[in-house]
Image 1: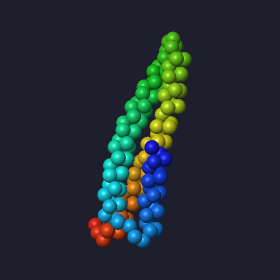
Image 2: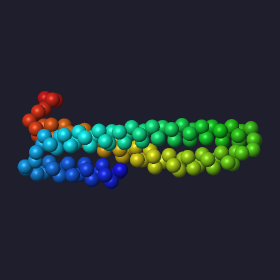
Image 3: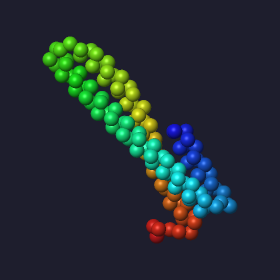
Image 4: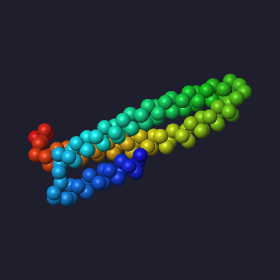
Length: 121
C-alpha cells in the first residue's frame, strides 16, 4: 500500500508539469483515490490502536507479575516484546498513510485551482 500511494502521488505531481490535462477528470479520479486511501487509513488506525492497547496491557501484566514474583512473568515479557516488534511497523505504516493523504488533500486543492474554481480566495 505504501508503494501504491507514493506512486500515485508522484503521478499526480507529474501532471502539474504537463500543459494539456483534463483537470475535471483528474479531480474525479483524485477524489476516488483519496476515498480509497482514507478507508485504508481508518482500518490501519483501528489496528494500530488495538495493538497499542494490547501492548500496554501486556506491559502492565508483565510489571504486576514481576512485582509480585508470580510465575509467568518471563512469558508475559516475551508477549510484550512480540507486540512491541509488531507495533512499530504498524505505527510507521499509519504515519505514512496519514502524511500522504494530507499531501493528497493539498494536491486536490491545486487541482481545484486548475479547474478555475478557488474556494479559498
